[in-house]
Image (cartoon, rainbow, N blue to C red; front, side, top):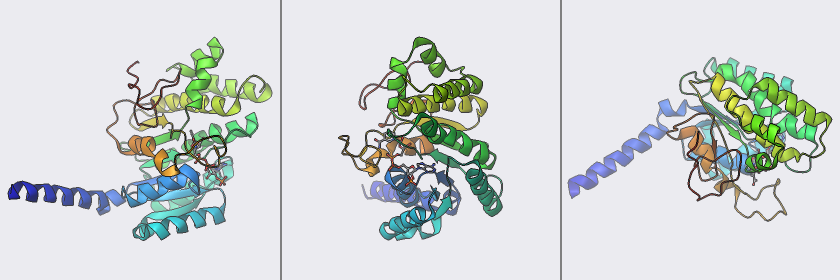
Length: 295
Ligand SMILES: NC(=O)c1ccc[n+]([C@@H]2O[C@H](COP(=O)([O-])OP(=O)(O)OC[C@H]3O[C@@H](n4cnc5c(N)ncnc54)[C@H](OP(=O)(O)O)[C@@H]3O)[C@@H](O)[C@H]2O)c1
């Protein structure tokens, strides 16, 4: 019995050492929109509980620095693995500058992963919503992909159940395109540009997240050695959902993102529910329902 206990303790110590060893600390991850809400909670958990080096992206320097300070207040042990990175995902110049900063500081393969978390909610125009929620992640990937570890790297796109919900009610041709594993960027871009010209009849937020899921399939096809997936954090109380009945704190909205970053993933270009189980992209799957097993 004592031998078993000693063995168990050794395993625990080894796991803890490995998680916080220098090799693991080299796993650098960028979280966009990390200054509040789910993004900030994710930055805290990735640095404090999973030994990542975290670049906390924020479009506003003061909000970004304050977020770093608030995380360090709770988790002072993260002092050497948390860094504010100025990053406005809506701006090519800002994204290019941030990628160049990382390249200069850490060279090629600066990053293990990216979590495209930055997003806007329901009160925004079609053009702005798409520019931040869909073109934003593409902009970030275009500029940061050359810095990602080509064998182990991961990208996590923060979608929403609003995406599959949008698809379930979309016109059949649009639904077929948005849910096809063969969808191309040209088709998707043309559809988004048309929606910007003629926004009537589409709910911008759900449409932007359906497009983000489609973009995730395209990106995963183009980069088969990386692990690239989309997920939803669940229904979480943040500034996006304030007053809409959500009650779970941001700390409970990180499970799927952490799974997509660290889990033993079986597929690529998939969409995960907030319970970190695979979900379909043409209809809603509630947390706790059986996982999607289709193609
Ligand atoms: N809350 C939910 O129930 C829920 C459900 C499904 C999906 N999501 C998704 O989860 C992600 C995080 O949202 P949240 O709920 O945590 O909302 P939030 O508290 O409002 O956080 C949104 C974050 O995105 C940032 N952001 C917005 N536009 C940006 C830009 N152009 N460049 C860089 N950062 C930008 C915000 O920065 P500022 O402070 O500068 O505005 C903020 O840090 C979003 O993609 C959202 O769509 C949320």
